[in-house]
Image (cartoon, rainbow, N blue to C red; front, side, top):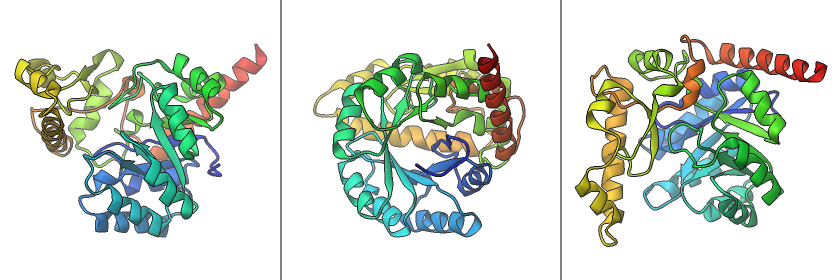
Length: 318
């Protein structure tokens, strides 16, 4: 569908993904996407897209939050269509408008889903592929393991399934494809890449901590999100206090409280990601278990390819 040599999307990661990561992924035979919200303005988004196109020839995408919390969504979509990115990944809402506008420009649309019901809905709207977000994913994860989710979605829908979560090396990539996935969205293992813009402390945390150190918190955005269980996270806890919980459930106030919680959480994440601070709230998934040093993205991808082929050869000989 995308004409890439290795079926991997370097996943769009809030605050982490940037042009250098996309360029490196394309040079490595894969592809990548950037959250539109990583740009403070739509002009910066346009400049970022044009920079990538100046540096490399290859497919890449933009991730759009499509619910009402993203007040810039329509402007971001317009830029993506005008600049003709190769694909758009939609998250947290109905992709109907995005699919209509993007398809008019020949742009593919991949939609985040966590279950069969929503997968069928986006397929009926014309989605080109599903991003199957499983419970092994980093950030806002699903609640079903990839071992269950991939077969369910393959049975429920006729469009490609791109599995998101649970891949930290080439062997795991092979297992995911063997289970039925048509492609993979891989994020956490690239946080500690040379191209990543985050602080050295954030990168070192991805090396020092592992799968057992990933916990779920509702304090960042009101929605469960995976973070590294640093001493600060242990001190502050991972659940909303009694007042926050009440406000989050109140029919009249929850919309505004969730928006406030999201804005506050994203501000804290930005501060932790780019500065040396003891208030460390770092998003990551269990696959940081496989991160052992800071490396270029192309090196990480090449190792994944070798591990993939070794796993493939092993199963072929058994």
